[in-house]
Amino acid sequence: MIELRTPAEIEAMRPAGRFVAEVLATLRDETKVGTNLLALDRRAHEMIRRAGAQSCYIDYHPSFGASPFGKVLCTSVNDAVLHGLPFDYALRDGDLVSLDFAAAVDGWVADSAVSFVVGTARDEDLSLIDTTQRALAAAIDAAHAGNRVGDISAAVAAVARADGYLINTDFGGHGVGRTMHGDPHVPNDGKAGRGYPLRAGLVLALEPWFLATTDELITDPDGWTLRSADGSRGAHSEHTVAITEDGPVVLTDRGFLGVD
Image (cartoon, rainbow, N blue to C red; front, side):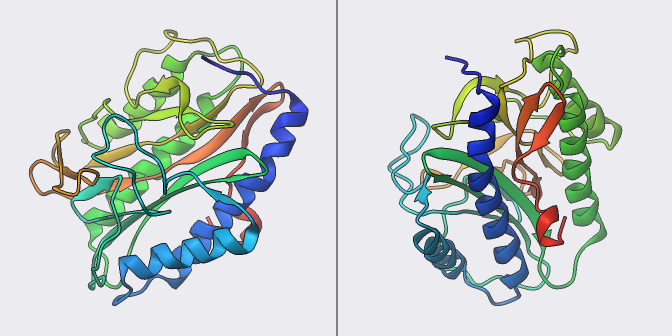
């Protein structure tokens, strides 16, 4: 069911958005060559406890997951791009890292993701990350009342195709509010002018993600981590965005922290 939020409810979602933004900014700043993925998860867990927030991941067990997730942070590295289950791995120079984090504050959920390279970066990795970021910006620009879901999807796809990337539509954006995943689904490809009409009060997590040379995924034996079928690297950018009468509001914007 698609739910619309009142202006007061959107205001009530702001603390969750700011908290998620703060956690991701902190983790990105603290992640270095040698940082262990399990240490990142522990750090996120610590921040959740201190804030009195609630994890959206630890007990999450959708149909596509082999078991409850069991961690509070998704850590996808190199050819992993989505749902990366943290494990005992120390990051190496040049690793491409995607962190995806969702949490609830006072019953309201926000969801966001960021990709970056630790240590020495490859130009092709920076280009891939940049494409996801520009695709996210295009998605946000299309998130206006009066448009349709297809306008967001088409905006994402146009950026990806212009940069030569293929697009997988199995996983994409989604509604967010009292729960992490709700309707409507917002694929990263679609036709402008089609799909559910965007109205003020709709809150969406928009999340372009692309793989360098494929659009096919495989699942790790852990039952969660999704990797490229050909071993090429992936990147993922995501924000929680409220559609209002005055335009889109990025609830997980990290700008207030002095970072992008």
